[in-house]
Amino acid sequence: MKSTYLAALLVGLLTTGVSQAAESSFINNHDHAPATATQARPDIFRVSLLGTGTPVPQISRGGYSTLVEAGNQKLVFDFGRNSATRLWQLHIPIGRVNAFFLTHFHSDHTNGLADLWLTGWLQPAYGQRHAPMELYGPKSTDALASGLQQAYATDIATRVKDEGTPLDGVEINSHEVTAGVVYNHDGVKVTAFDNDHGVNIKPSFGYRIDYHGHSVVLSGDTRYSPEVVKQAKGADLLVHCVSMTSAEQMKANPGYKAIAGHLASPEQAAQVMNEAKPALTVFSHIGLNGKIRVKDLAQDLRARYSGPFVIGNDLMQIDLPTTPSGKGYALWQSENIDNK
Image (cartoon, rainbow, N blue to C red; front, side, top):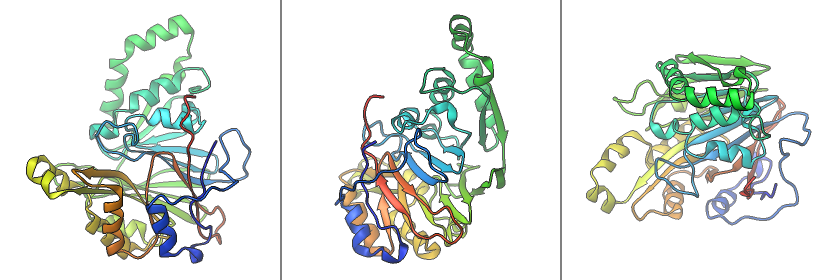
């Protein structure tokens, strides 16, 4: 895997200049890279951005999806467009994911689920699921799972008959959950919490993942939320959404007013960071609407927040400490976009 090293290992060494360099894509090549799925590693706490985009169909930013690897657990949160492809670009068989977690039912968070489910069930190297898919999410997750199984019943029956693919791997064990601890296995704890994606979009979750005294918080789709601040206080990593729309675009398309009311603006995101003070914030689910560039977003955020943050890209990976006394992080931008 070709990768690029972006940030110092120690939080104390991080400066405004470091994060600004990352924001402007000033990247230094480094000889080391994170271990791939086939390389042995005694312990790991890693976040990989599988998709950093929105409903906009684009190659550079897939639909929102995040992989968290902690110890021997591989967990995927949300299932946007191309999430299965991104997993395999990291050489992680889809069938090796232990559990999948949904934040809410907007289509850009679910339209990759069928791909992860069915492609992960196939038996070539990219799939290899031999046990039911474990799916966690808000109320109505059971209906989503049942509907998928009904919609693809013919495909499933055909593959079982033609290819002998074992049925166990195509079952879905759906778990409808409410705010609180929803998953606790081998030292990895996942807590769902209610964020604020607007009055008409409920339930809507964020998730906190704890491992060996360290934590990652995924805001989910949200505007400013005191609960996100609460969950992210002192976290090692906060992955937060952000949306920025030009005045011209807002005027030309009134629909963007609804978007602005549902997703954090740079001002709201900066408020969360200033109140929570995570060791690092990485932005994902990035909405750039109208003539807005990544540089514009980074400048707006930097004017409001002096701590370390990075504008995420697909296949960006962040390694966190795996010992209780460990500090800091390493941040990598994978360039592994081959056709495997």
